[in-house]
Image (spheres, rainbow, N blue to C red):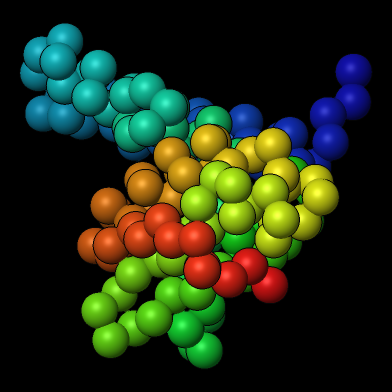
Length: 130
């Protein structure tokens, strides 16, 4: 059996996170602690590992989003850290063709990124996608 580099890297990441968590008993004193760690699609390790997109803030007030079909850029003003996402209807006109069906998933993942990054998420028809 052959495993590609990307799949092997993903498996290593998953196993490393589980080892990191379970090696310290103070992390998992109750079943609720374990459930919180594993989480669901919105949070916890499950959400982190099952994400469709990754987000990287860039110096020119841009949020680079990398997904299964490529990369696009959203606005990320730094005065008050806020990520701007077009409304679902506007997304259909502005998004790359490969990403048009991903708006609901992208919104969930962007909400999670914003929560962790202490940023606001603004869904606005005029938001730009480059």
